[in-house]
Image (tube, rainbow, N blue to C red):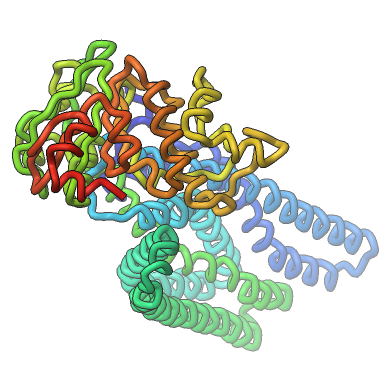
Length: 566
């Protein structure tokens, strides 16, 4: 049976309904306590009016003592009901926001990506700000109901004094809400656009930070900053628009509430002057006119928060309801699998065909960097099988027929710019803590000098994105992680571009030794890795044009010699 946590909502309204349904208990208790708080707040001026009238009639110390005790009870009720009511609602709000953050993050990390036109920075914004704003609906509904309770109590109390006062409150409240409901729609549309632009700015700055080093290298940082400035300026302008609309909304709500309170006060004064209500009822009416401002203000703000929550829920639905870019199969490859690329056409690749037998170490010398990137993307499943011509097989089975989890278990493609996470050297090499080849991977990747450099060894703290490591150290750390995974088929793309020639030679030997008997494909122009391979495939102009050992190709192929010798 599918639980609510695993059900996939279909739209923003379904997300809001799921959030409300999942927190019915907390919202019920929160509504009761917040309703009690609002009732106590409204009862205060009513009690004052009754006390004034009663005291003026009886003028006894006993009556005064009872009145003080009644006021103390009301104040205690107001204090405790607010304290515990908000505690329940905010706990439910925080918990619900956490659930949606996890759901959005899980959707973004699925092995098969969703078909949605959002960058990682936009998904991050949805998983944080939009999740929080969607969960606010948990507080909005109880506060809306409790505010309505306060307004009704005030209307009934004033109606008992004089029916015209009660009708004035009811009619005024309906008129205020009618005006504000129209204005809240404008806030909703403006907020959706603001959230989209802020998310795009977040994605832009994330891309900028990732590429900051190479941008500085070729002097492109100023152009990148200008591009970010444009996106951020658009987000700022839309935020100002939302703030302006929100300011008009808040100002209108406050003005209408003040007009209603003034109308109640003046009407009560006129009725008292006419002798139709007594002094106690006048005190009660004036007090209620003041106290009713808060629930009316809260009541009038709720439509705005509902529209914001709905806009955020719609953005979350973009991620949660996005169909997968491909439908994976269910089969699994055999252990000790080989790799076969059969007539693959994608991007710059033109019917590429080659085979890496189980246990073989093969290198691909790609003359064009774009071809190397396209081949790595196809093997890494960054391109779904139905988006390119030809077939890729692992263990004799088509990638399209394999379960994504099975592919991940048997085939690992390590990019040349592998991400480094905040943590330790050990947690970056073995994130799951289950690898039995960490020390061998450290040795083969020549990360030993980094480990020896710090007395903490593998427990040396690594900053986010490896900020406290050099480029070569980050590259070797990424390589160590790929080797420690110990998969049946390992594909490495340019794993030694940031290290010196001596270290590169040692890494080539270490990788060949550690991966002996395991299927390994290295896409590289490194002479050391090419020499360590059992054979080399030359990828030129999108096709495999030559195949032999590195040394034979050096002796027989002039173009190859010029391309790979340094």
